[in-house]
Length: 635
Ligand code: PG9
Image (cartoon, rainbow, N blue to C red; front, side):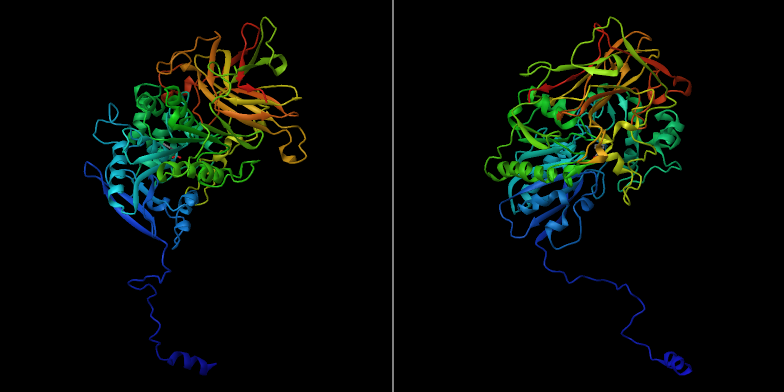
């Protein structure tokens, strides 16, 4: 032993081993890449330069460009992995674009990540809400102009695509578009954030998105999550008081966008002036546009279908197409085999990208064969297949071949296509803001919990719309109406309408209406679906806006009022053995802020004493009926 020790001690230093393992510089001997990557600072007309990453397949000539403008880090968005292969480098959702040899470009919007300039959250178009001489439409124009002049491999044609915020920036390029912009695919875009996209639904504020505002606007790069000691967002928001109190407690009220939010609870000029569906209908473009939307999109349920609808109504159906698929928000960028417990015929997201988006781009960017897309393509979530329509909705109030069919609320919590016969009838529940109805089983995670690591909070959030509604159906503050077990199929294709006649002892209040497909009590092919309550369409309506979205008014206590509002699109078959069910409740917390049920000027600033229980009566008599109007069509 002593000998070995002496040997070790006296061994001469090995000068091939350095004690500094990180050299001054290192470069991989990499296999040759099959693409060229250029990173450019592209100048805008006011001198601000935007960080732009360009991927060009090697050998490309006369090739179209597909552009995405993002607030989510162009460098990160465009690198799934480090690889010499363009297919493996770009994200999964780009696979078809790469396979078909396109040039792909990602750009950071102003003020985010690598781009210069100031960031404005969902920057409005130039005009009253944006007094500068730039906006996303000019930035898109300047970028497209630069790309067609400075990417010699291009054929001078550009398409834009993007989901959500990236869909919003794609839409902005449609205002006074650059002539080289030849096709646009806005996917679940934010369009009207007050009516039904990220911030409000019919005036009820979406607390759950608050973390996003801190992450997006507290710094230029990756944002931090709002710190909290409370795991359950339900408990956290309940303890906080009003949404304004929560924001003030976290210092979030100092963020400029939050200040604007707190000042604009109603649908005033601030929101109307940014409602892109209305703006597009007034200033339509001729650029071919393919609108995409998930049927269970938990974030932007309004944008794509309402834009397509407004443009079609304004006479611009010829260059606008619509696809509604069985997806959660932005699921089209990933895999579309399933959503929660529901599974589909194959990868529906890939089917959309491969069979709809690529033929669309090929036609308009490459003079490829006609894409022959139906004007409207909607997945039938009951039949489990794609269906094609010349027009949409198939059944509607007026102007459709088929009228709407009322499904009435009846005695004994029944639902029926026959009108009630009673002279006077109602059902009551007490809505207590101290015990709001949860929107997911508790604990409810913040969607941003685990952001950048486990992503744990996003998982339940992304599929909350398909959550089994049995977790609330026995609460005394949730009214549950259902049909008998169906003996034949009921097909619905269109936009259901909630039509509720209700009185409250309060002076304000919210109404949530869910249209539910109840699975047979036993379901041998998939036993865990036995009795499942699958919501196929639902929304919330803030009562103070029943007469005017712009000018809220107190609800007269104990006087019946009509609450009539459209629910999201459905293309579904209720099958024999299933039941149709409707839930009515007055809160969905903490997704939506609590209505104090006492009329106050601004609910963001409601005081603890304003939050009061109210007794709600839902009327269901012959003359004073409540119903959900269904777009029933013949099979
Ligand atoms: N739904 C997100 C968002 C879009 C626009 C504004 C705010 C949030 C998104 O997924 O990008």
